[in-house]
Image (cartoon, rainbow, N blue to C red; front, side, top):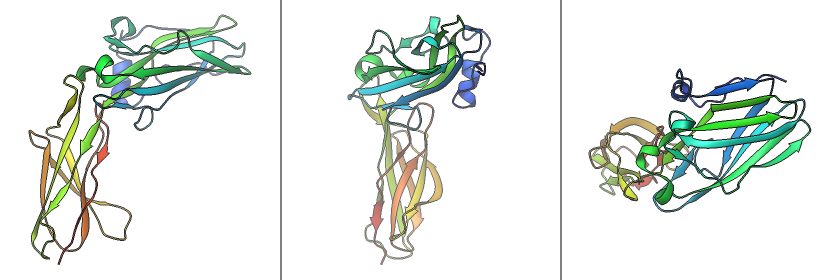
Length: 260
């Protein structure tokens, strides 16, 4: 069995820095327990990202895989926000009192379910990096306990619109493409404009399946993006917002403009 390497499953350099800061987490490793895959399903985002809006709750399933040559006695985990588990300012409460574990030879997969309600469980300050503390014990006495096994992102849902005008437009004339980027506000339970963010202007030619980027413009104090282009041919226009640590990616629906 390979020995657990703390931090091997961290998501990105910023998460690595946060989790491996001196004194940030308590860690004890005895023996050669192999702690492997950590997986979230039902999160609504890319990978292990968990994305929530303002009202609807989200049910997620979380699994941790661990193995030992003597077999795994218990593999439990806690999802929390903060510098360490002892200083957590939020901890997710699972539906089960204990994880449900299934063994297959020397490997065990333990599962918990969570229902996250943004009105009850979240506030804006909790968006971003969340951490995973684990407590894994083998039948031969080997064990691993750490506050910082891995991390995931809890993100605020974003919405984005696009409107190109005038429609139709004469060839060679100026086309103005506006859009509005908003995201869930977990403090006020509504959507507010996301300011000073890059909104990438993209176009698609009819009959072609992909969009091409023309660069980006920054959203204003209301989350509004505005760009002016020269109308040269029939095209669909849209904006794209790329993900941050606190907010998920979103693409507006393309707006078709007939150029005459």
